[in-house]
Amino acid sequence: MKLNSANINIMVKACRKAAKILIRDFGEIENLQVSLKGPGDYVTASDKKVEKIIIDELQKARPDYSILSEEIGLINNDQSFKWIIDPIDGTSNFLHGIPHFAISIGLEQNKEIICGIVYDPIKDEMFTAEKGNGSYINNQRMRVSARSKLKDCIIFSGGPRYKSQNKELSFEEYKKFSSKVNVAIRKLGSASLDMAYVAAGRCDGFWQRDLEYWDIAAGIILIKEAGGFVTDFNGENKYVQNKTILASNSKINKEMVEVLR
Image 1 (tube, rainbow, N blue to C red):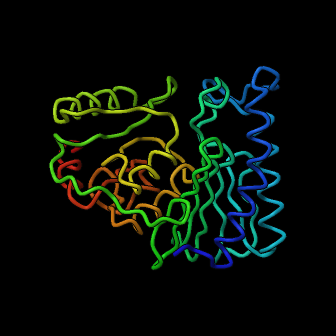
Image 2: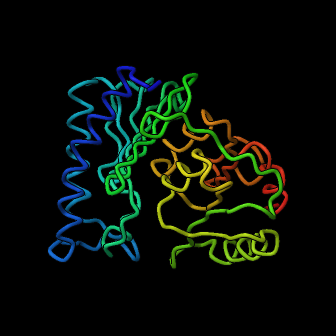
Image 3: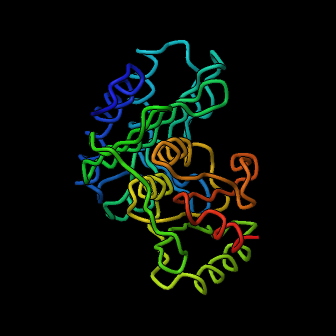
């Protein structure tokens, strides 16, 4: 089985078209023109080209939908439907020639993510999900892991950036998890892929502060449709407002919340 609704097909087409630019530019990484967007936060020419292709494809298919994208901000149309786009999640990896980054697109209906896609163009892995229809990786059904004890898990995280106001809190959280997890904590540099990996059962949980909506939108539906939990650090559904996100399989959420409280 695979997901082939109209909205999923639109997103897949946009991702595949934009990915051609990413793959080409990744092969010519030394020639990229890079502008400084802010301390520790770079935007490449590829970011802008990829974003334009994605937006053009989405607007061609759904001209009335609103769009929220990392580089251009908000295109305000029909507020009941909104595309949430991160053209390159893992820009620093991309810039340094590390093949771990993704295109992330979520579709929101009445403030709820109803479908999402995270596409890793280098590994050609397409993670897709739609409300009520499950999560898939390259058309194979995904489920979160079944590990029930935090000490046996692999947990992902990210940050903090050097300009973060919550740097010390993030370090404390890392230390707390380090004392609870016997296996490993990993920091791979792409929040959308971290969440996709939770959905695929490749890791068991993920936590991070100070993420933007476009970093997590697609991952939310991927994990929920794969049987996992997405909450804030208090175990509630205020992860967008609070900018604290905790994603996990269905068995370690409470234990992760206890660590973070």
